[in-house]
Amino acid sequence: MELAAWRDAVPYGAYLQPIHLQVAGPDAAHATSSAVQESPSKSTHSAPHSSQKPVEGSADGTPEIPQPPEPPADTGEAQNAAQSIDETKDVTVIPPFASECLNNGEQMALNVGGPVWAMDWLPSKPAANAAAVAAALVKTKQKKGRRTSAAAKKAAKKTAKGKENNQVETLEGGEITAASNGSAEAEEGGQQNWRFLALATHPPCQVEDGKLVKATPPDHYYDVPESERNLIQIWAVPVNRPSTTGTGQNRKGKVAKRKLVKPRLVYAIDHDSGVAWDLQWCPLVKKFPKADRRENILGVLAACFGDGSMRVFEIPAIADTRLQMSISKEAVVEKSIPVVIAKLPRILQLSVQWSPHNWNMLLTGGSDGKIAVNGGTVASKLNADMNLAGSVSLWNIKSAITERDSLGNLHTTPEPIEPQRRYQDGKFFFFFLRS
Image (cartoon, rainbow, N blue to C red):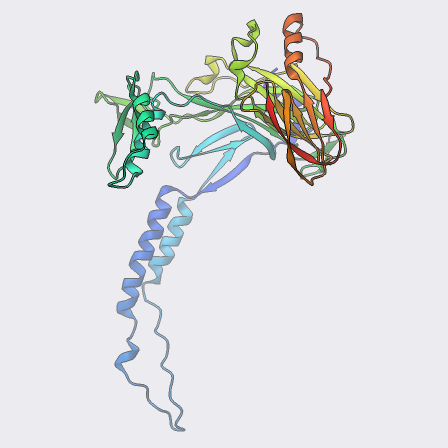
């Protein structure tokens, strides 16, 4: 399904509004600074000096107060400067599910179709020479005469060993950057790097029977489950974007035309689980069990929905045709079936957090003020606890993933899993967790 078809299918799709942005152009700052620098000097020459004439008394002996200096005669220049600032402001109109680059690519604005309640960047690999840059930064910040620690020397030696492109360049002003064989800018015919952002919005308005009944977002309650049609959006945001338009020279001295690359919506999940309260990418997707369908995925995403469920999705890899310099097609909207559904009775799960150590472990927070731990095993409980209303639940999504991989039926919605263990004493405990 294309995005336009999805908008026609949802009640509020016809009421999505464009965004009007008024951004001051680059000349506005120059005009402001010029007005500030010139006006005081000219007004000083035109204003009379009160110290040149002594204070004279009036007939009744009351001293006369000197009159304040007259305003400078060239106030028209300040007005012209202010007028020029207004003229440099440009109104940018961004349609729903579109984006624009502002101020020659220094800023980017996205119209995602509603108020954002959940968003998370897909974890990306650090640059190949990131360690070398970090080591150089640490070295430059060390005080003179201070000995380098053994740990710092060992880290620097380990970083430099076996890395061919870990060159470190020092620019004017002492700024350290990473140098590599590839260009840092997206030139014509070059490769563009992307970061992927997952986000979810709440409906921007309330529509009943095809009529707009409320122009502002509808109210949502923590203790009232809801199941409405909505989207989880995956945006591709350019990383190596040029800062200016026009032409520039590459490292070989050749002139290449540079273009501004806009962020674009590349994939979306059409679901009926209501609003998404929170979502997060799995940081350990490479640790998932090996499977044919998992060899070509962008990542694994967990989200908490308004129907009280926490669902885990496998997001497919984005086709190269949708990551070209220019946008040619609309984003793909699919009815993606989750690989895991976790649910608690009479509880809306509002927050989710993947474990940074175990791929099968997640932390979820419920609407009753309780907190649930998904996956893993409890090794020991700390004696200290917090007097917070809530509970802790232990889930095992590893068995759910393994069972689904063995069955191979990806077109069937999985049965909701139940907590393996749950503590309902109204307190929040700290645990040591291990796989």
